[in-house]
Image 1 (cartoon, rainbow, N blue to C red):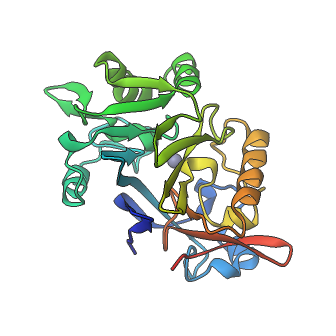
Image 2: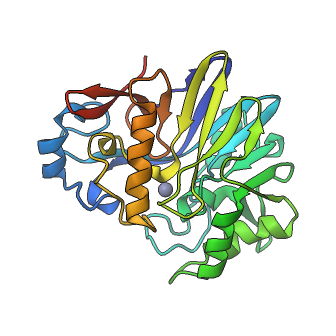
Length: 286
Ligand SMILES: [Zn+2]
């Protein structure tokens, strides 16, 4: 199911690289399908498949705001050597899909990476004559400075060098801008710091004509975490901070009109956080 979001005068368009039901323990060790069905019956039929697998997605969220074409996160990318076999050496028509959605790569003005994990930076670059070059040659790429410094210091992981093939070439081309995690992109778009999953992680707030939406990034990976924020990701760099950030985020947006759009949420893709009894849930927005 693919839908766009209207936030005041701004349309947010998902361009999906991959999607499907997945055994949730890959992302969330607690999300065994049986446990999901037992604890999260509320989400079956929307964010959860009938067999308890989680509906997930890898996508770029694209919008035009304040006269700029903006892409939030750039998926896994093509031709990249990756440790995860499902992400290794992909050849997917992402750029064609992006252009069809109204975002041909040369027209993109701003690329925002919520953080610098492998599935959020891939299309930052593309392979041309054996070299990694920026996919969006006319864009300014916004990286949170603390996030960039963290991964630059970490060095390559076994089986992949994400920084070298998907981040550093953008810096070398002079297209990267290091920003604080509360950077104001324009009158309608700003970052908000949501650290823990990674040190410089930021979510993206979009506001227009009295309406607001927030793109989560990976502060949560799936809607079930709205009800069980203690179901952390095995990929959280600082799990205590990630949990505190998730709880603060849920409290901040619960029972408001803000649309929460999940970067990895499948099914309806997002919705509004509501309080039901002593817990929170995510209900698809109309
Ligand atoms: Zn991710």
